Image (cartoon, rainbow, N blue to C red):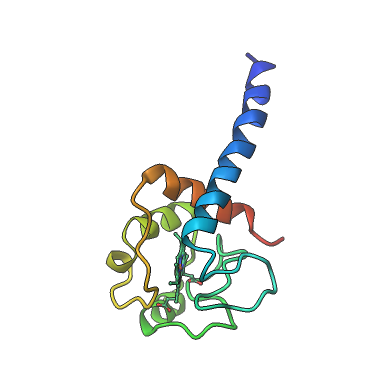
Length: 121
Ligand code: HEC
């Protein structure tokens, strides 16, 4: 088991990351860049969003609800991203995202993990 577990993890982790990337490409990439330093598109750049202040892309003009959450000290982490994606407007009424979240819990956790990996050092 001691040898099997790392072997299994090394198989499972890249698969999960690829899944998150595929879901992101299909549902999010039209509006969100994930490369550090890339300009914001219709939505803010999400590179490094895990751990970042809500409303924290300096190149993006956020809605009042996200600005207020950031000013109140809220920060994104993987669990919060998953909850957000279940129903974005329920977490932030008045959000300007113009997109629904993701219906499948497995997609939500895959995207949250994918974004966590885009964390900039
Ligand atoms: C139609 C364009 C569009 C799509 C598609 C979209 N978003 Fe967004 N997203 C936005 C906009 C615009 C905002 C800023 C909303 C505001 O200011 O209220 C935003 C905000 C966010 C934020 C908050 C960022 C921050 O800096 O606080 C996260 C996280 C996010 N989106 C994740 C996602 C994910 C993950 C997907 C795919 C499942 C997605 N979005 C799909 C346009 C989009």
